[in-house]
Amino acid sequence: MARIEADDLRKVFRRPDKGPGLAGSLRHLVERRYTEKAAVDGISLRVDAGEAVAYVGPNGAGKSTTIKLLTGILVPTSGEVRVNGIVPHRHRIENARGVGVVFGQRTSLWWDLPVRDSFELLRDMHGLGAAEYRENLDRLVEMLQIGDLLDSTARRLSLGQRMRCDLAAALLHAPPIVYLDEPTIGLDIEVKDRLRTFLRQVVAGGTTLVLTTHDLGDIEDVCSRLVIIDQGRIVHDGGLRQVIETYARERVMHADLASRPVSLSGVAARLPGATVTEERDGLGVAVAFDPLAHTAAAVLSALQQEAEVVDLRIEEPAIEDVVRRMYAGQLDAAPGERTGT
Ligand SMILES: Nc1ncnc2c1ncn2[C@@H]1O[C@H](COP(=O)(O)OP(=O)(O)OP(=O)(O)O)[C@@H](O)[C@H]1O
Ligand SMILES: [Mg+2]
Image 1 (tube, rainbow, N blue to C red):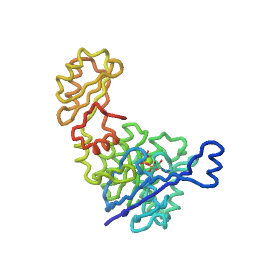
Image 2: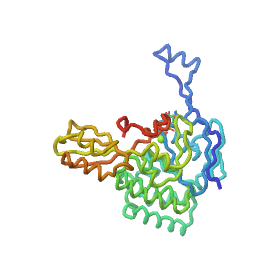
Image 3: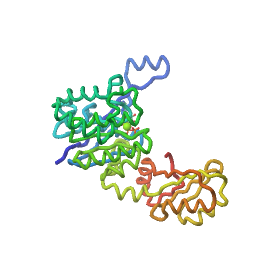
Image 4: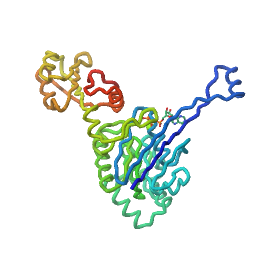
């Protein structure tokens, strides 16, 4: 059964043009000029019950706008949208019963209330019975380990603590659909891992998930379907594995060294196909490698032959790179050309 159905969905934002100086602003009063921008430009999407979809794309691609259309926060300029059979912007309250939403950049908790009070307000808003509420809350407290946080105000929580509470808030009414817009933004690795485990459990429980993120690790762990959006249009919709293996395979190991390496070309010679570059004035090295050709352990060992490694970090490709490469049709993208992080 289709939980989410979008058909040729468009959202155009109009922004008044700024005129130069006084003459410009007077002209602006007489004949208003607008620049139109299609943030979502003809999206058709069908998500079935229980699917976990990664919805990714570069900055400004239209991801958050899509989520806002699906939650009914925004009214589409044209096209059709149905969620759980309901048109979200026409029946916002009914729609809200069937969905949970987290916008990673914001909180849905009341800043100055203890978290528990926010949850109780949500319980009342959703009309949850006492037993149902208790059962859902107990399960979420256990899964997200937020028992100690319930008596703090949201204001006093760290970002990771707040995000765990926000997820609980979004799932309190056990909605069949959950939209998460960058739920791991700004979190450290440990908290990210914990959240990914949680999301896997949520998906395993049959919840339909749409997850927006810039972090490839999130989607590899949690999703099986990948939808890529760019400039308001879907440019890929399909399996996740193949895209990752084709366009996002290489990793970069950044190593901090105790002193300059004996020989960079010596490192490169031990790792055929890898690209070795100097960083931090010679006190660091970046090795871009294909994990199918060399294990991370082999890369580290090659480095250790030439220098003393004091710290290291392995970087995954950025979503932006994946999209760029898909366009370029580069099957073996040059790892040295990486942009961003
Ligand atoms: N309320 C608005 N008014 C005018 N333009 C908007 C509005 N909201 C979004 N836009 C524009 O629509 C485009 C898509 O924005 P959107 O927030 O959906 O992108 P995104 O894919 O979520 O990007 P990011 O990865 O940065 O979160 C951008 O060009 C943005 O500037
Ligand atoms: Mg966004």
